[in-house]
Image (cartoon, rainbow, N blue to C red; front, top):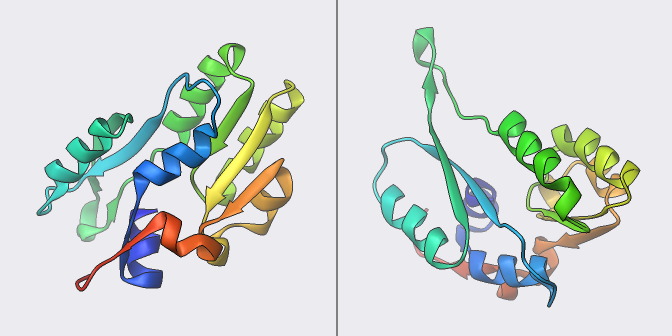
Length: 152
């Protein structure tokens, strides 16, 4: 979400409002924020802000491959966390537009869990939208989900 908001709107995500939307008056069990440590300016402050808003920050270092290619990937870790917690949950709100999570939503719905996706419609997999019980398009509610910034 961080990069999508920056690239699409030159803005920052209001993660506090994202969390409020995801919880929607229900009992919050866990709220994970999956981040990549890339040793960039402002990173530590961003992670601390997420924690203050109620997220459990799960961090891993960016991988640097031969030739300088960099990659950060939480797909498997996120899925494992959700599968472990499934017995405690009735609803899972996924804040991602990544089509790699279609199978996770299918698994959850197969276990009687409600699935919600919150993401930017412009960059969200159509298959993910179709698989979710509900899709909240952050593009359509920018005032609620974004802080405009003067820098990228």
